[in-house]
Every structure is written in structure tokens, then in C-alpha cells.
Image (cartoon, rainbow, N blue to C red; front, side, top):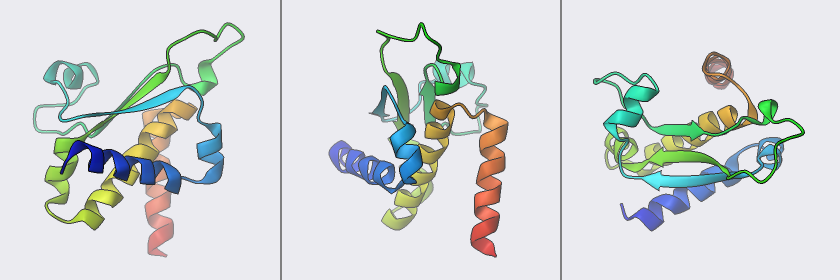
Length: 130
């Protein structure tokens, strides 16, 4: 998929986030990279047999104090190639994967740690089953 079409799917995923989540985002930029650099994946604890689909880098909103000003935006990187590999040629699956990664990384931006986000994801999955 061409990068601009992939970026459009990310914009759609952001638009599909709950309104309170979209409104809470502040000073954050989304970036697309084809694949995670191995060094970066190692830094965040991704093992060789695992895929890094997205990455949040910045100061979570819950950690920002009175001195938070004049800083570069937080950065959410979405890695195109691993998402496309997981989806195969199924665009509906790709959209769902992108939404999940965007939702996850925005959660980090808003101040949730990995354990909290995983618990929210499990709760979200469970509520859709019932």
C-alpha cells in the first residue's frame, strides 16, 4: 500500500477514537515508518520473534507539570510493514489493526502504562463478545 493511503487509514482511526480521547490529545504528532529499527525495538524490549507495530515517545499528559511548555510534540510512530504483514491483503483487518495500535499508543500519550492499557484492551475485547 502506498504511504499516503496508509496515512489516510491512520487519520480515519484517529477520527474513530472516542471523542473524549481525541479531545484529550495535546501536542502529539503521528508518523509512519515502514518498519521498526531493530535498535529501537530492542530499546523497548521487543524480542527478535515479536513485531513492533507502534511506538509512543514523549511526556505523557499525566506527567506534564507547570514547566511543560515550548517542547517538541510527543511522537506516535505507526509501523506500516508489520501491520500489512499481519493483515495480509485484508483491508478490513488492516483498518482494525491500525485502529487498535492508534488506540494503544494514544493511551500511552494520555498517561496509561502498558499494564493498564493491556487491561483496558482485555476489557474492551470481553465487552464485544458479550
